[in-house]
Image 1 (cartoon, rainbow, N blue to C red):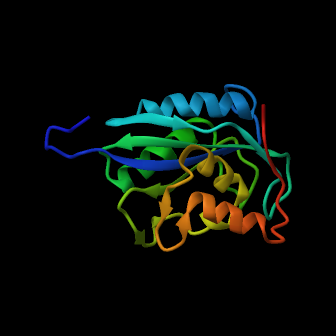
Image 2 (spheres, one colour; image 1 turned 90 degrees about the vertical axis):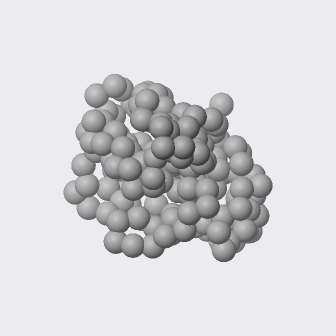
Length: 174
C-alpha cells in the first residue's frame, strides 16, 4: 500500500473495548463490527488481531469489558487515524458522560511505529498502556517483541505488571 504521494505504510496498534450493547449487539458483536470498520478506513488494513479478553472496569463500575488489540498498516497520519477511530466510536453510539464511563465502544490509538508525541489531542505511545492488563495481554499476544518507546517490549511490560499487586482482573476468552 502506497499513496499517490509515495507515503509508505507503517504499523499502528489500536485497543478496542466495549462493555455496553450497541446498535449491532453485545460487546463481542460490537468489536467484530468495529474491526471491519477499521479495516475500511482509507489507506488502512488490519494485519493482526488478538484474541478477545474480558476485564473488570478500571476506576469505574459497570459490567465487564471485552477487549482486543489490532495491528494495522496505514499511510494515514496519526491524527487522521485518530479522527477515523473517533468517527467509528460515534457511529456505534459512544458517549462520554464522565471519565471511564461504561461505553458501547472505546478505540484507543496505542502506538504508531516511529512516532512519539505529547500534545493536547494525542499522546503516543498511549500514556497508560504499560499500566493496563487489558492492553498488554492482547498486545503481547500479537507482538510480544514490540518495543514501546522508553519502556521496553510488550512482553517485558506484561511480565513486570503481572509481578506487581496490580489489582486488575483480565482473562483470555476461548
